[in-house]
Amino acid sequence: MRRPGAPAAWLAAAAEDIVTFMIRTLSHAIAAVLAAIVASGPAWAQQPQQRTPQGQNAAPARAAPAPARPAQPAPAGRAPANAPAKPAQAPARPAAGGAGMGQATAVETTGAWGAYVGGQGPSRYCYAASQPGDRSPASLKRDDGYIFVTNRPSEKVKGEVALVLGFPTRDSVPAKATVGDRSFDMVTKDGKAWLRNPAEEPQFIQALVAGAELKVAATSARGNASTDTFSLSGFTKSWERTQRECP
Image 1 (cartoon, rainbow, N blue to C red):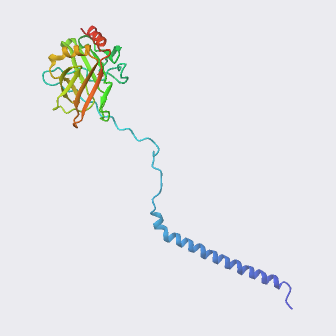
Image 2 (image 1 turned 60 degrees about the vertical axis):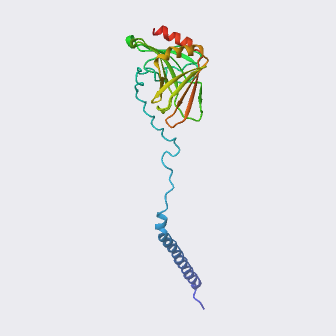
Image 3 (image 1 turned 180 degrees about the horizontal axis):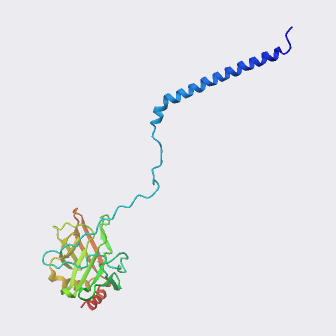
């Protein structure tokens, strides 16, 4: 005969054995997993971290603008053009432009041309200016182009013709300005252009007054031919205003 309470003691002992077995089994499994992790640790540590670079979604920083070209002397025998920069306000056509030469301001705008006045006293100067309405070929990269017809009374300069072509020029290649059936040879230097013969400026201005459009053909430093076409609508009034402001 078994003693009272023996089954309970036996069950308690069996339960204890089962729990001990489970703990040992679980401990072995955990140890195996940890060992596997440790074994693969160096390879895992070498995996690059996929971090989003700082500012990845921000727009790229804008490159610093190129410095303005220094003023360059005109070809031999010519006074330096005093109107190589953009007018303070662009003529009505084309509608573009920025800060102008010194404090020059527009006093009249007619058609594709404007009259501008700058300086004070002996340094006063005036010019009629316009931008090309068409530039060929369109694929050629250029900055803005301008033509100026300038009076500088203190220097006894009247009707000086100068252009900013908006691209580096191949100065060894002649350029040409054409109005109707009249053509005028030009010289270029550092992206600017003047009539080769200054004595032809009065005839050139007369051609602008009588003509409908001006074409200026030049060659870029890379050898690309470029042609700018200027409308002459409004030139006469702008030039007359320039004459009155700076006689």
